[in-house]
Each structure stands twice: as structure tokens, then as C-alpha cells.
Length: 346
Image (cartoon, rainbow, N blue to C red; front, top):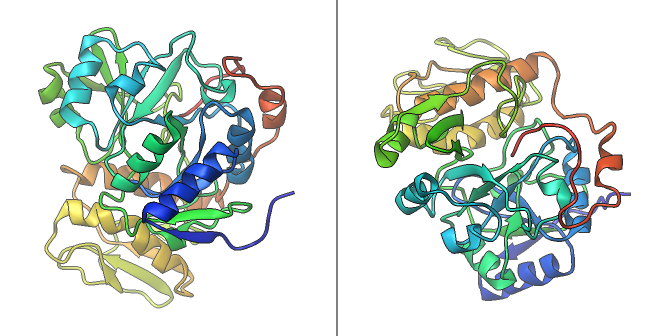
């Protein structure tokens, strides 16, 4: 049974951080702020905590989780770190970059974290509050986005509405506002699995290697690769240029709308405001949502990726992922046990 009580907000101070660490040590799940979106955190080595994350989100067991660490030294406990990955860590950590690497056989994680994949996804968040929590715990946390699977990502504490979650550490609005870029490192090859604020070009320049981009129909190895994702509860219309009765219009640039992602046309500002605007639109009482055209340049690539997947999910009424069959995979889980299937890191 999930707990229906409203979550308790913890202040992002020393006392709140200490309480979050205490709850994690006890096997509880705590929503934490990062610079990208709020994450639903559990102690990565605790099978019970990982089970709670899956159950709260309604998440299939084939979807692995991202581990959040403090730095490359902590990351090396969980994955083999080739020189190319080290170069990216040096260039972008802490920050909005997740690396998919070969998992160490002795990685101290509950088996359901990796969902049977030989890889593990790692990120060092830049948000000082979550970094302090990880340091206090002394090991990695597993932290997918703090939403019901398939729904809008939360970029403010008030957006965290996940059944059974009792604790939310309120670190204010997320600075980046989009989930991290995810790159798979395979020998001397890099593949962008999910676009984010860090573009393939920028990552490639830092690495000195061309970054490939996973195409449609690729095996799901990372979060955000599903065709339907990030969906509001209302139908979503893209590339809208005019107001229409009953439709809440999210503007950009010269298209004012009911709310504007960036009147100046700044794509990074638009990215930071995207999910907050979608939450506002969802609560507006309108019958549907429209969003102005977003240029497919820079951060616009990631914004359009999220919107296209959200529009498909909203049109299909896909506002949550099914969980049939996931319980058997996580029951009896241990530190290094595998569960079958391929999945996504979220």
C-alpha cells in the first residue's frame, strides 16, 4: 500500500540535508533537487529502497536507473572508467552529463538498478544540496526523475506529486530544467542516447571524438528514448503561432502566449522554464495546450525532443507506464543480481 499523505518539505539547510541522509540510510526514498530536474533518490545498495522507487513511479523493471555520485573517484567504484570517459568527466562533471559505462562486476548496487544490463549510468550532479546528501551518505544514490513514469518532469518541489513519497528536499527551481544529456562510451566511440543542454557537438569537441546519435528504433539504453514520454494530461499541439479559445498557449520569442518561455528567444532560458510552463498549462483549466515553434538549434534540439515525445504521449493518453511483470524482477533482489531484459536509464 502506498502512503497517501502529502510529502513533508525539508528546507535545503544543514538540518534538512541531515534528515534526508537519515531517511536514505533507513531505506526511505527522498525527492532531491538537481540542476536538471528533481530526482527520486534511494540508497543504491539497498534493494528495498530501489523497490520503492519502482513502485512509486509505476516503473517497469526493464528500465534501469541513473546513479548519482560526487566525482570520478566515486564513479570508479561502480564502472570501468576508460580514458575517453575520464576526459568527459574532467570537462563536464559536476554537471548535466550522464555517462553509460561498463559496470564493474563487484559494483556495490542492488541488481534492479541496472536491470540486467552490463552497463551502468553515472552522473555527478552540480546542485550543492544533492552533492551534500551524497557526501553525507558516503555512496551513490539512484535517482530517476521524481514523477510518475511517462509524466511531466518536476523542476520545482511543488511539482513532485508521486504517491507514497513522504520527503521532498526543497532546493528551489532547477537551473537547467531539462534532464541530462546521456552519452554511451564504448571503447573509442561515443553515442548520444538522449539530448540535453550539452549538445553532441560540444561533447565531441571536449572529447576530441565525433559523437554519433542514436537513431529512431535503437535499442533502449537510456531514459527519454521511448517514443512516448514527458506527457502532460492534456493534448499538446506543437508549432502553434496563434491563440485559440480553450487552448493554453506557451509562447516563445515574439509569440507572447499565456506564458512565455523566453521573450528574448534565449533557448537556454526556454529550456529552464519548459516543464514549469507545462505544469502551469496543465493546471490552467484549458482543454488543451499549444506551444510556439522552437528553433532546432543549440538547446532547441533537446526542447523539441521532449515536446515531440510529450505530444505523442498526450495524444495517446499515455500519462503513465505500466508495471505488469516488474515485481518478479525486483523481488529477492541482491547487490549484484541481474534481472532480464533491456531498458532505459531515467
